[in-house]
Picture 1 (cartoon, one colour):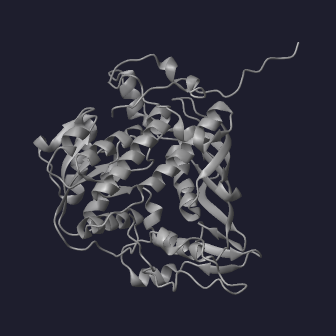
Picture 2 (spheres, helix red, strand yellow):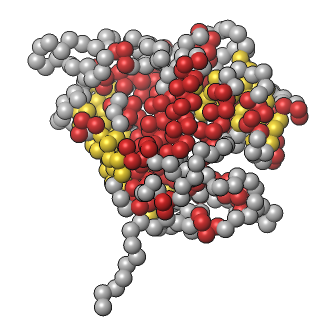
Length: 455
């Protein structure tokens, strides 16, 4: 990736959607009359909403050749999902920073899908993404470490390729602006971008989204999002690894590579809230800490309070510590009731369930229920129909919402959307190479001032 400009955190403070009109689940009219008291009032005009059709299989059409950037577990998973989406779909090239990672992914494709990638179509190193983007292919699947997503996507768009890019869209303001500019260029040139926000293509989420947009919970007032799970992946450093290789291989533990826990984990639920409300955050105050972590420089817990447009509030929590109670989800509260991701239900103010996703009916009607496959089905359909999937900026907004909370926790300061979106903060190191560096520059960020005992 080629960074825009550099700024250390110390200096930070100075410084055409295709519209589906009804659900394939047959949930009835999307909008109802609001002329009489007690009637449901739709939250947004239908022309503002993208509601995917979610068929079991992509339509047939021209063969689509794809290349994969990032051959780790999520990358190979995305490749499998793409291959399962329809007919005449193929993975023809691989790229990864590390040769051993590429070979492991190459073997998994061979064993799992009988896909054989020849040597001349395998590329390694920091410029590997450029080499695959310059091939005569149709689509690039990007599952590299988070910090590289904006730059890799930007280059793929410049080369005229359709893109699947894993979340988050970016982990800093510089990357956010790169991502948004590339997304707008893609829309203007008829290129599709599918961000890895798979809940937008999950049948129960889409059905719930429709019901909320119909006005079943009334105007949205607030939300509570949480993601609690065990510790991150632990990488034991090998003697032959340089400092940079160690950090990139163990990317879950370094904030400049993965963006820390809000960007890496809670962003999914932040994105659901942003999607359902169609709002942006105005400001945030957050805090976090390291209680159990003893490697890297990321926190293992965060808590945050967002104020959104129209006075809407969102509370968020994320924790990655072994031996604690786990769970992940979101509750969205409206004037008349609430929606719960835990069981895909809508409850009135008395706590009574007034609607719930009918999983059994969906199983009888559809064969495919894996959201990761469904999102690729929709991507292939848009490519083959020649329509543009215009949802990438929504993912970018959610990514920057996460960044805003992280920076608030790191500094102990309240941050506004205007501050974070205009900041030149770029977390990438000055030199992107597998070299040894002064690891002190990647120390754990401490907010506020040190405690001094009273005299």
